[in-house]
Length: 137
Image 1 (tube, rainbow, N blue to C red):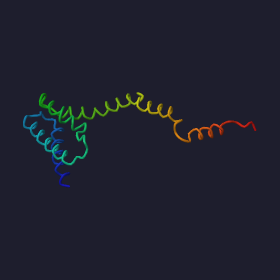
Image 2: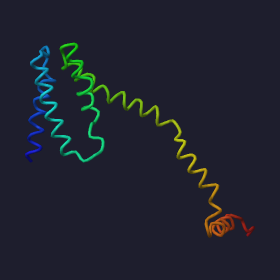
Image 3: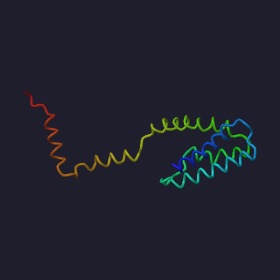
Image 4: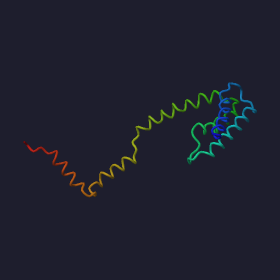
């Protein structure tokens, strides 16, 4: 529970800074960096996966903070850009789902060509073939 409270404290501060419509001063930017670093340290301590940096965390670290340093604002880009990314990710997913997966195609063709090597397959195929032939009655 302590871990969750520590993370929530830093996330709350990050959220308040990202939702603020005020100009991002160097003090606010330093505060954002401070809470981001401490949240990330706590997050990585408890995260068990190999890839612990997710999309929004990556955008916060690699895109939003440098953008805030350059432009002096983070609230509008964070609200518009991060939520808009889901639309584009889903759009690309729909487009790429139509592309045939070559690996699956090759595996299926290989199985079809090697099916005769399995014991008993010929007997089963002949039973199925005999069952589909009309007897003329």
